[in-house]
Length: 345
Image (cartoon, rainbow, N blue to C red; front, side, top):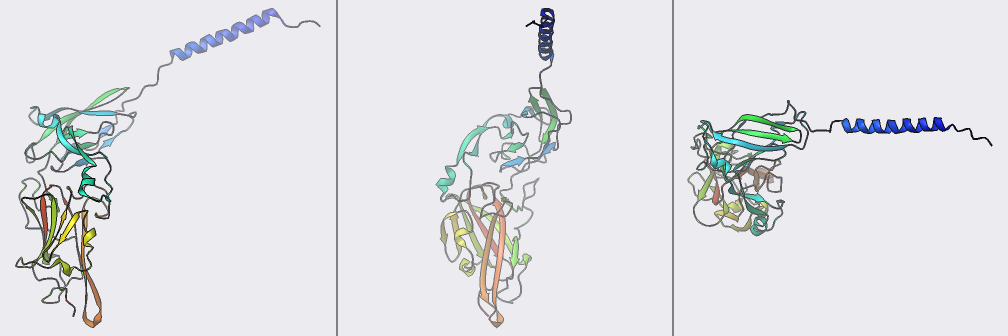
């Protein structure tokens, strides 16, 4: 049989394939490497930060990422006062309390709660490395930092990735003085009291013992009082217009053992006291002891009585609150007009 293959044709074909391979390899080597980008549209949507001192304050949703490639790295630079002086109080490391394990609201003792927290050295005001969120730690107080009406501080932020870096200039930090509890009676600028107390969060179907008339918000004032000595505790007291004690047992439907996340409850005919861990609530997280948002403790005081016509009447008073400063606190619920009516008709 005759061999029909042409040696010249085979050589040309081989040469063409070899050249195509070399050319394609060369083209690939000449292509630029993929690089991350720094978007010109990236910006901080909030440029003035006014945290209330004495509590952990996280500023989130404050950054528009835009066209920048992630992950991004952020750091605060050039922290200074408004006149350009250095501000070492905000750049040096300070002991702050952090959670090493998640708080669940099911802990059975103070020791179990404290075992989930530890101390670390960090700047009082810092930026989260990859999110751009700012955090002011509760260890920051008005004895350490400038507060309004002072003009406060100015700082810059460096943002970077493998594609480059960008700077955001002249962000402002203008802290407010501490509010040890909320709802607060203090002026946010001066720190002085504006009111005697606050009103309850809700009142339902409460009647006065003397007139049998409905009680309203302006008939009740809630006072927060910090007393010296002892360990961390929280006491609830009820008093009449003359500040004479009202027996808490009159609130006979109250679930005292579930009122707050506290321990070793002591109930007398004048008060109810718990050992607690501060702040209250411990974190912004919904538990059986908080409101729906998880940012306030929710306490409900209820009772029932028999009204006219043998009709069962259920009444209640609630208070949503926060306490940020540890110590021995008492919450006094002051019936400034008349006592609540607990007796049957």
